Image 1 (cartoon, one colour):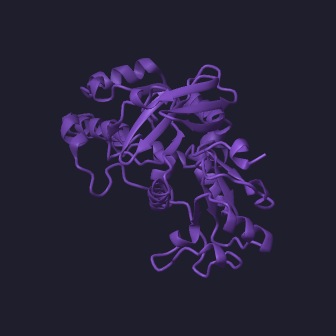
Image 2 (tube, one colour; image 1 turned 90 degrees about the horizontal axis):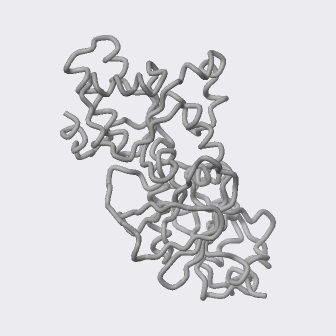
Image 3 (cartoon, one colour; image 1 turned 30 degrees about the vertical axis):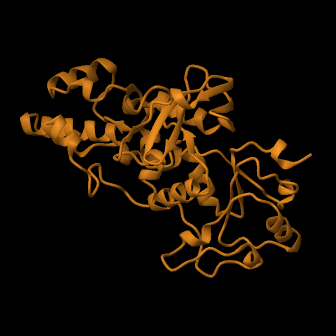
Length: 336
């Protein structure tokens, strides 16, 4: 039996990829699976099916695996080319030795380059949405409910791959210190800009949904500026993230549609799948079992403020500003 009948188009195959990169790819919702032992699964691979093999820069293949690589038609990306500006990808014949340019690292720039290279191979950038469908952002309350121990050891106890500090807004502290028109404007700007970038927010002073509603009224925030924001407790958001991490998605291209199969426990939530074509993306709902996603039903839209890898990729490698360099300030002007 050929591999094309055994392997779906997604998940993407990984061989020898650095563990932090594997974790980062999974956290941002990219369907991936590791080939732990060898490339035997590629034996008999047929070019009629698209898939992708990502090879770690320190991966070296034996003679048998190099023969498989030379005969199969699967697109291959050597992550060695992402390790530095001077680095180049190894050819398939050079895969018997490690790259001399260091090892791949998961950060915001790496994800953008990977998306571009994946699309060059004929693939489509597809990942699980950061939030339940149809939400495009989240504002959390009830952080104090987590308890003193959790807040003191949040770097260890939080299920998120970023620290809880990333979810806090400087403008909230300014508003609490002095509630006036200017501090209200700054808080509106940070809330709207976080939403437009798809970044989660946790308001430390808000303990309930009613308190959050009152805050919005006090700072004159128009909810229409955040039409698909998810308002929930931080505990619920953590629960969603833990469930999302365990979801498994298999995807195949079928003429003018995508056939997806999702498995895992997600009672009470509706997972979404984000599909990118160039700089445009669409989010679709996933239900348990088999889903058909037809091309003509994709509502593709451009949003240059959002990172294609979601908030975990946005913040990977450094603590990004809520208002990043080069941001077009449309959110600021709208929220003002």
